[in-house]
Length: 372
Figure (cartoon, rainbow, N blue to C red):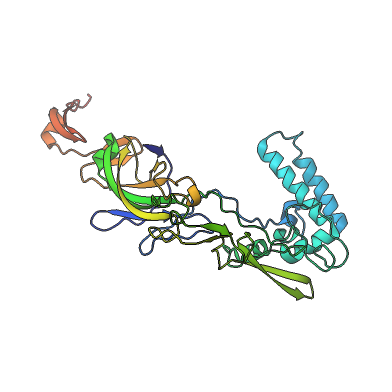
């Protein structure tokens, strides 16, 4: 089953003689597992770490004092108040302005924001810091601050340091719940006639499927599973380093259990403990009539299977329409050229002209005689 998505995405490189290429649509923080020749396109709507400019939201410079910030906030709040300007966009804008003022009007939060950006103040502007370290807690860091978020906001990274700051030194458990699979991309070239009238195309794809031997859990049938005694089931190990700013905590994936929090006696030999196997599959894609170059089709559930029993991603078919020597297309209109003799142009004639599915006879009217 395919769904027509009438948009014009970025053109992708089309393959060789078969004019087909295949790639993975990767989600943030997850790299394509297939090598060489694949095309990555981020189509995920997953929320990224924000690093908004609160000064720009209020229209003030970074050197603005408290009075200037308060004055700017009042002006912006009046301009974007939902009662005066109803609408979803205005409401969101008003909330952002309030968030910016809460931070910049609080000396402690403003100091953290100036140093580390939005990631440095956590998710709540109302969380006040105690005496001692400027990041909350006596000599430690507040639990709202996450080192991975700070480094992501600085470098736009995808998790090179999986760390965090914890006030009490306790590690955060790593869940092993279902994760949605990756979407896949396939570039398909079709002829002009198929683009006009529609049709069916068979495409051959390689995607990840749930391992039928272990059911996707990566454990050999009959093997024992117990809580990891290295990380106590959290899936991560912590290392604490003392710095002038307080206790600096980093976390790493537990090497003993691969971050699952479980000790598995023996992994599945079919999937090497991954729970997924790569398979080749041929599917039939229905091309609706009237598609254009650059349109894409979505085939639900034909992407990669999700880890830990998560739902499969979708397959996106990006269409490229071959040029036709006889026809050219502008929107819904199709044009072709026909040659007639000078005599027929003056006296009129019936001319056969090609159309996409055959020929038609067009009557050329005679040229009217010149006036008196």
